[in-house]
Length: 627
Image (cartoon, rainbow, N blue to C red; front, side):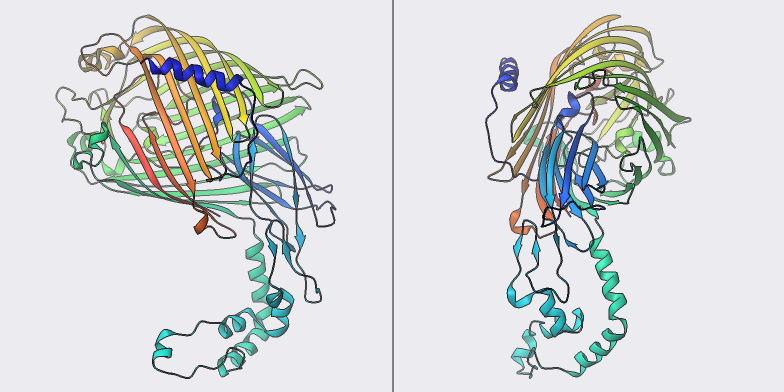
């Protein structure tokens, strides 16, 4: 406990210290952006696309993949703008038919608007003699230029057949092999076939290769443990395999995104999600919509898990749509809603949200935002939904209600907030906010406990219940800063005063096993959340850390009646594997350890994380391929 205040002081000192200069060249990360903890509004990335003669190129598709996916099309001046980007590193690409694809570029986006320049090189045709160059890659061997290959060989198929490696078996049998440059019967036949259909085939191949599609594949393994010495114990259950695929493709006015994943273990699950974002260049209107569907199958023997929900009820679906209008140059209005259905609940969940953002000064960067929302959260929703940011690695745990008679009840949060944000010196952003929350049926999550009349709980099973209604109001201040070109940090302090109005039906049953989840009528909470995102260019290493301190965590000791001061953390480390990289793919090795239960720290009740008792450490490791 003595080390924690020192660590906080070190982080604060780092935020206020002068920035050093480091070279940047780290891989993109799938972790949530640091500035999401402190920033009121997302950042923007602007730039221009030009050819080898520095002339602007219109119609080029720009894509950015990182904490979020964004696409834009350059205007007639070659300019583009990517909006609503959480701060962090992004893999930026440019695509234009007839031009060589530019080498992938890592751009660090902060809350201050940044401008970049991208240069594309036109692909040489049949009559072009100069070398074909790819921006940022270098020249092609003079003996194998595109023009020479097409003049010598009538089709790509024939060229590949001529240059096939000799078979080992044929070499051992001393079977005569025609020289690579000697025509054969097969080549002549293929040449005739290629002459007939080569044009359409080549057009289709070029069209597919020119599609600016971004993708990500995660092959991960996850497990949970309470103590480090139990990490490799079979008592924790077998590790769960996770496979996740994401594909993003832009159009002239928007972008499509499709994600799907599956897990394998005692609790097997699969999920598929799709979305579309419409944001034409220069338009005052944009929107995004999507849906997801998840299903689970449980093959284990936990009696409570089987009694809580049958396999036919382990399904969940969600739809959402959000609109954004720029009514004036300095006035934005957005609104939308989410509609969710969980088969193990007897009701559907509707969550509307609206906000307004104003930039009151004509040439200033001050931003004011007002937001009102109502969110309904199902117990166990984190086991079914794809997170909006970061890698998808579902815990794969089962859950049941603390009282079978009371069953499952969703949590309802009415949230009202006013916030202001002001950047300083292009690398420091200060934000302040005031909020009010009205929470009905506050959720509580219990790990590692035995409920009276229930089966002993294993590490892969937890109980959910409700403790009552609470009214909360508070304020917060945040500082976000790019300390160096490779380190971005933020710190957020929040003070909240709460009043518990009435207990829930099952709160007495919960209090029997964990008294500290039943709070005093009046309580004051102090929260300090720090985050650091670091890039190590020399080793292509990315580190993301979130550390949360709060005075109101429910005590893990059943003999303690009051909440206590505690901490939660999330650490993610990704290491690029350059020896596996190709021209259009990047490989990363990922290791993450966390005991933070909530995926999103902003869209939750002030008590959601505090009412999670004894959360186990969740470990995820594996390989990610981005292309």
